[in-house]
Structure formats: structure tokens, C-alpha cells
Amino acid sequence: MRGLRSLEVPVNKIVKLSLLLGSISLLMTFALAEVNIITKPEILRQQAEKTQKALRAVLPEAANGIIEPVTDKGGNIDYYAGYSDPEKNNLVGYAFEASKAGYSGDVIGVVGIDSVGIIKNLVITRHTETPGLGAKCTIDVPFTGKKWTLKQFTGLTVDDLKVDKDGGAIISITGATITSRTIANGVKDKLKKVLKTIKNGA
Image (cartoon, rainbow, N blue to C red; front, side):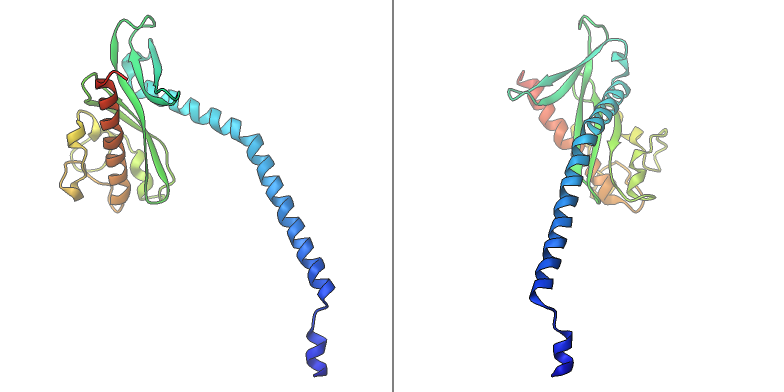
């Protein structure tokens, strides 16, 4: 009994330890919140800059013209319209951001299409896929018909957006079918919505 009593921790010490741990946790929470407040504007600025660069890449004909956002009634960006001249006399196509959950997180890309919905270009702007596997989703070399590359999306329509594992023509990334399917389905889902919105004149 004497030995067991020696192992007992006084209640006041437990309370003090709990308060100390609670205070440390609270301070860490406040510190992380402060860091987020400080870094968030810069992160958003970099993301916006990356999106603008991607828009120019998927609508190269509008590089010397203007690419302007088209918003819904709530002010959210539905898609972008690209013009070859600043006066907006010549529409060269549309662009939009497509996002869908992949293997490790959202895979986000920017897609350029012509006036009837045929894909011109696709650029992956953000992802957290597995290095050496899903991370290969950014490969953008000429398409040879044998390996994954974003170039294989050029010329496709909404009905063509299906990977080979699902009976489609898009060649999947070796060992990363989920990532490949994510990109194809993400582009398809958003393209459908954009074409519907354009058709309705919204």
C-alpha cells in the first residue's frame, strides 16, 4: 500500500499540468492563426498570378488582347472570355478553372476552349498528388499516343473526356489511374457547366 501511495499524483499538480498544457495549446492556436493571417494574402496573390499565367497559356491568341472574367449573379467567376484585341472585337475562345478531388487532394487546372467547346489547351496549376506517380499529371510534352501528357486533351470535346481504364481514349498515368480520372472528369464536369452557361447567355 505504501508503494502504491508513493505513485499517486496530487490533484493540484494534475490541475496545474492541465492548465499549463491548455495554455500552450491556446498559444499555439493563436500563433498559427496569426501566421495564416500574415501569409494568406501572399498565397492568394501567388495563386492569382499563376492562374493569370495559365490563362494566357491556354488562350495564346488572347496574349496581346484581353481575358476577362464572366461572373454569375453572386459575383463568382463562371469562366473567362478571351479576345485577340483590347477592344474585344474578336472572341478567340473561353477558359475556366476545373477542380476535383484526386488521390491526395484537389487537382486544379485551367482549360482553354474554342467558341464551340473544343479543348485548345490544359494546364495543371495546383495539386498534392504522389511524387513520381500522380505528380506526373503536369507532364506537357508532345503526344505520341503511348504515354500520358496534357497535350492529348487538345482537340477533345466534352464527350471524349474518358480515360482508357474506363473505355475512353485518354491514356492514363502509369500507376496513377485515380489522378488521370480526376483530371478527365473534373474537366468534363466543368466544361458541361460552362457550355450550358454560355448557351443560356448567362
